[in-house]
View 1 (cartoon, helix red, strand yellow):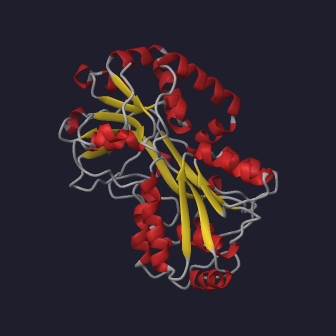
View 2: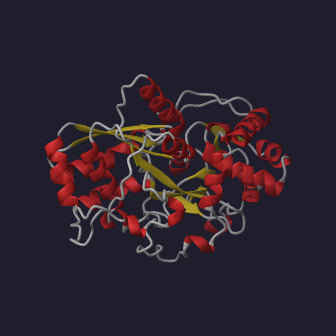
Length: 370
């Protein structure tokens, strides 16, 4: 196993970090795009109505956003405050598994600071709903969200789709040799040029590796190790390292279906193997200090301008797939399967223990502090 290295070491060779969580890239676009008058929430309120209510409420909206790089909140903060002058928002980015424990502490201390949370830990929303901690609210766009991605009682809803698959540096790997299926990572030409987040540090990556060993067997991990893989913390860390050419290929990370031409990284979906897609889910807490601003935020996130230029699969049913791509249902991916995986916490913990045994303990500080 390679030694632990920091994100700073990985990217210092050149270039800036890749743009962060994909929905955040739509924020400035949405700020410049007017919303049609027909876009109303479940109470018949437009964004303008919700905005005026939030202005009267005052204060700073606090959002806990699941992520693994502090920059992932910058775009959405800028877009929200630009579109809604006079309002302030505090986006706190952290790993979802740390946000849910942070929220639990706040609840126990009876000092809830969060207004809205959108996280990868989908099972948390079931738990919070069962404990009657969430506000029932149908934001703008509610009727266009597939039933599989929202609570029937409107206590939580998907806000955007995320896909994890494979990435490669176009300057180091020819397109016709790009790693598609997971077995491609065993090619000798990729030896010592692979970087992947620890499966037992991130439930999404763990899900990917669960699929890998189901198809290829547990010996796949030792073969991957023998081909030289650098394990790191955070799913953006591999993306950044591939972008600047420190490593050639990665899996279990996100990317743009249609890349910016100037970017070095290309993101590819498996040809045959299963891959991960899920709806990053959000909710307003019933005891939120800023419920009006929280409703505005949820409706803004799901409004057509925010959703109309997806970087991956669209969430809203009235938004078409990107050019050259088919509807999500025609790929070997299942958001419902990931939700079931996340709900089975006993199995998730067993898998974490298994991969710690196969790979070794997670090393390194949180990617948000690196």
